Image (cartoon, rainbow, N blue to C red; front, side, top):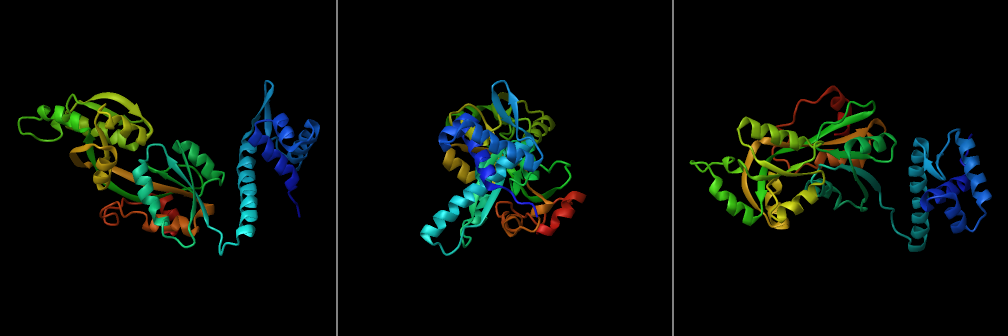
Length: 322
């Protein structure tokens, strides 16, 4: 049986955390050659290089990043073990690492993840925000248990797409901007004519909502004036709060959006749909905590079960989660 030398892994972990061999050697109060030797022995044991040299510095290889993720978790668990022995808890909190794609509104993510609030023992969440491709890479490397996204998952081997739900969209603006737009209403005073020529804040090009909004305006011959494109949904709302432009958000969260960002609703559309998915891997398909999110994390989506889209072949394979 092969055994991992945890001394070697510890020195590797120190080099990654400190940003270099010299810094790690100083931190550990060891000589530079000693740390370098430990790294070389770990690479020989794994059969893969962990670093590549760029100029005078070292950069993690793809394997190095993979090993670094496990090393971080291993030594974090070791610290937790020591703390647990000292405090004698009745049970160790289960851990769950969730990736949240940039376009997913923070309020939506919070409401979905609220399914873990009342768990006993409490769930220790680790949340990572990045683009969907970056998060899928971490998912496939088993550094994440699941990924929350606003679009169907990529056609990647081993990635399973679980539809969580969908909802309509409401358009919001600061009170001052809303007042200035009131004179833009068409003769019949209908929405969405007041948005014609209005300043608009759009989510980034990777957002599924962005594409739905563009289709919505084109079909109704409404031409708002785009003043900013912002990937981060929370930052977009901060801009809107200052009266920079109109933005769209999930209708079930309209009252919370208005209260938190001090904006008002201009109108809503059931044809502009916000859809949310959870991506998982075959390895995690039976994880009870991931299954809980798929099964119960949809109370913000009215009529979710009745409007569920026909699953794709990949989604059907992953349906054993539910």
